[in-house]
Image (cartoon, rainbow, N blue to C red):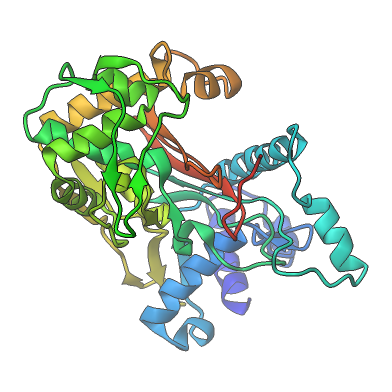
Length: 390
């Protein structure tokens, strides 16, 4: 663009004046094509992120966004985005390679499209999403809204409503800790039966199918025992649980049913990331945002958004929850310990906490986790909720 060339010539002229480069190199550098990271191999970097930014800016600036020559500075960390894309690709391929996987693979889906085969809506490959934030500022460092932007521009990270699964349980425990129930509080892990609105009985079980008797709520969260979360939710009241989740950043509708305690509620992934920022920030949630500033063609700042930070939990409550969520990643029997410390190889020296999440029907796979300087949410599943494995 003309403005970019003009600014570069100005900078180069000053470099010549200060002896940084020889005068004879001025024209060589001034007329060289401007390098850009907007595209690699013909494809835009982080297309879901770019579209996310574009929609925010269009709402604010309207048609001027495309005509006024604005300079947009975003929060994207390109190397982190590249690592995220590589990791997600490994995740997708790993799911497709597992024994019992019976859905069409992504490559087979693309081959069918290329061959002109008409595929029904029920034919779908495994999708996924990833969003990483700076937990202090809310800056979106990486975003993957789906497997292929060219096939589907739907940004699952910001728009998809999916069952939260066990990733919702920390809100139950947070409400309990806030009501002065300590991590050492004992709940009996045994059968629970309740009548549903349709007149049938609901008899939830644990993932293992085994009841383990009395255990502390710290252990219940670490092992993700369904019955502990359900009974705890009943004891403190699902209204308290729902309000806690909403204060922390969940804006999707939360029904006050017993099953909500184990994640039978649909949430947007970016809301889960926002809610978990409350843990990482010891009680202060931060709104995810992808824009640092907007300048006009002359370099004047038009928009310099500040982080939206709101204290929503007592720091002591948040600190206790951090300790409990560290147990998920580090504790013996913690549901995330093998995946994070062994498979992913995160060193023990890096303090981390988080929560795994799998829905009862096996249609959604989540992890929401954080270190002191990074927070991330990841999800795998099919767009039309279906069991991933039998």
